[in-house]
Length: 337
Ligand SMILES: [Zn+2]
Image (cartoon, rainbow, N blue to C red; front, side):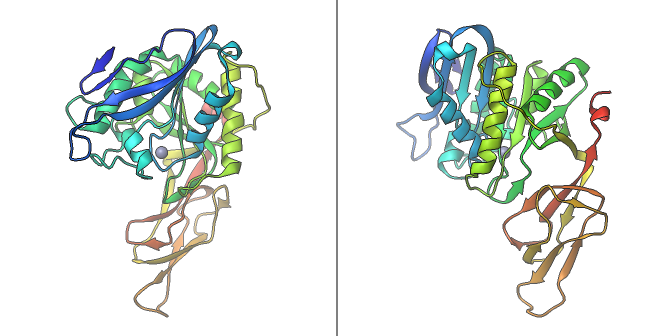
């Protein structure tokens, strides 16, 4: 039995074979007074090799990764795996069941909850279990995201760069093997409480990704992510399913990006799509006043030259809502220096 605060499991992570089970969270509210909140887990372990942990449902309304994990669990048998695959297809299970980004139990955003805490609500309790018990098991972690209900992303790997050059190079290698059309590059601890940083702090290789968005399932983004995942697992020696990826284009989602942000309450028409290239001053969106029909609309302009990486897909906006994100493309040579 592994216990960490209110989270516990008797799941066998260590024996060869293929199993599924649960990590249980004790949470006492009106609904769960006589229940456990069950976070599903699976393992496929074959011969000697590394351990790779795959996680999805970190945000509940992001689906392509969840399906990729289900498909891997269905398709692979232990005799096809050299090493161990650990799956957490619904990391923030309450959020997944609520079709939401964050947990309905405590409003917790899993990707702002690391390294977690045992006494600060369900979301941080799950994060603390992952941080204390599961990250240490893994040689590498793939964490799957999508744009969620509000936004659509370019299909991309998501790479966080920190102070450790060796670890940066190891994670960069994962991003290049993943071979998505783009790789977003951010700074470790850029958002605070993210899974990427928790893994980085434990010197565990980590790559996240963004596949599609809008709270729907995209078959095209799934296919991109499916092939990319199989390439990484093949590259790490766990399975044998190679394919040719793209030469990924790196884009800066830290200091090198800017947002087209509305100052109005209105209805937004986007004039760009994820992956488009724009110039500073390009007209990227038009916001019409809902209450004052016929009034001159707001023109939202690109703040810089670059690649559109994210677009809002809920047209009803209010002041402060981003319509799109424009990113500086980073030369490959800059990534490798
Ligand atoms: Zn996400």
